[in-house]
Image (tube, rainbow, N blue to C red):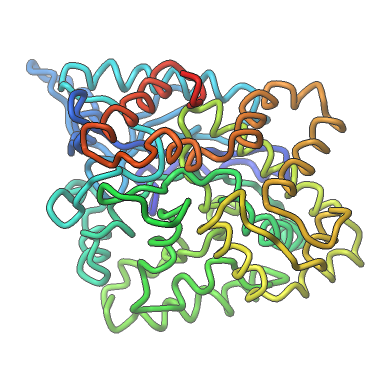
Length: 429
């Protein structure tokens, strides 16, 4: 979320890779027809003690270790673990249980959850309903300044991966590692090739529109890949201060001048001592999402653990070069050809060029070899992504040349079934 609605006691300071936080966003759609439905507030009710028992709308419903919360628009619901989990291994079943619980409540409204990063035919100008309850001043400000009735604000669902740090040294090392892995994440996780009822030409159209959604104030998004920083003070000076300065005239009440205004693909959340990765499209089921998180985290961890001499090389990698790789992966996903041999060397890839798919095959293979016991549960979903392509590629093959509404409804109904049942989307269904 842009801002946590419920303030709690500060969590204990966690060292890098001793915890992880996951946020999954899903669309709420009609069961028959799959049009978006603005029903998020009907799910986010805190029961009252009164005789009616109707409850009041809240920003977060706590459900033990997990919770449901709102987003900018009323047709999106977020599921998250409320405290960092020690490992990812227990989260797929936990998230899947919450999906079932939400779908059970939505059934009474003739609605259900839809996975994937973009609704394939939503008209954001006509169908966007901004969250009108608590923290609505934040959402009204975004809408006034940037026009939220667009795909770049109202039709983009993602997984956020939160990795903790303790102190400046861990922050700097983690930030350096994340900015190197960031560009190739869409090659594994793109799931948004279709919008407005047609193929967009981008495997990760969500990231394409996300990168442009704050174009009136370029400092908010930058190049999406964050700039090199070596400590918190430098981050605040180089990344946060320019954004606050540039938006000040449009935000005189300082409603948006918080660290979550930063729209880069990975942002520092100093309030909870974590870096939040934002470039991962939502997949077809939590098992797939968490497999992507596991592969991403493993790649980041290996870079983080490199020696000081490698850290210097990581920091010297130009942001523009990384942004170029990211741009290509947003468009072509697994088919992207990476020819930056300095970048590949930092990832220990043995060749001077590679397809993004071959690079992920290498990274995942290394994870499986070095940590076979814990990594085994991710093997099957990652194998589908590498052998059959990211979900975007599989969706395009399923749609073929028939982009009629009826055919799109049939394909995306299968996608909803995958979320309901907790299984991968494959062509052999």
